[in-house]
Image (cartoon, rainbow, N blue to C red; front, side):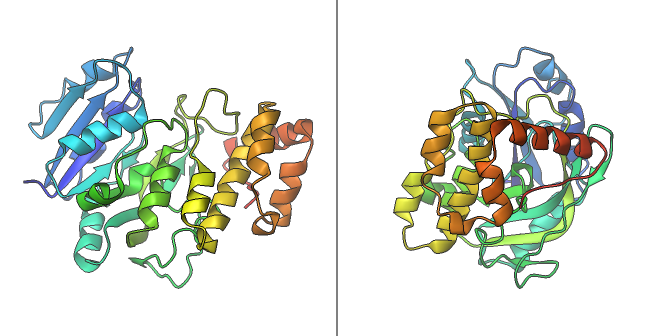
Length: 311
């Protein structure tokens, strides 16, 4: 049995999948299997992965397109290892990623969730690395409160995450009815129940160059997590309430950008505005035209390698 099962959902990533897969095969820690779930790609993605001859690679083809959560769930159900690491088909692992995750597993046996920091590759090939301020934390260890430390840029992306299999047995798989922020939904459920070990070494590269990613746009046709459900479920957890309001803020901006007044009003009405910063309150209540101008300006700065946010 391998130490890790590496789950790679694949849908129309012909520009990226070869490099992503090679980043796994180049790991310094080599005890793994790779499960690629092709979700009915219409480009050359599937034919490209079939060119690889490594016997640790298993390819599963969905008979119909089911979405990202379903692809991850197929990988989880197929996994032979106790620890399941996820890699999106347009992201990259640095060579020491799995070795660092194995280090966290060995040194923090009380944890069942593991991740490292990441950097961000922009279209102009500039690299951004966020400097997170995690309370009571240095280099690596147990993050005492995931929710309180994720009211800014997320300290990890899905491609940074490794999950012990028992977590899925306890809380269930990814919610297949959600097709936007499915990772947020999973994080709420898992981080509320299990301990999380983390390394501040950036060993994953998140590619902000993929055309399939939705950034700074509306949410037309997207289903987001049911924040009201989690607010009721964890009604005694002020840290989770604050995190939910932060998520409502980020999605509320996107609803306003797309002119979706109904969903904007419904979402924002549930926010305790004391949980937001003054800058966030101002942005959320700004006219749509001003919000668009600010968003476009941020994108221009981002292309220059400068990131400005409202967190």
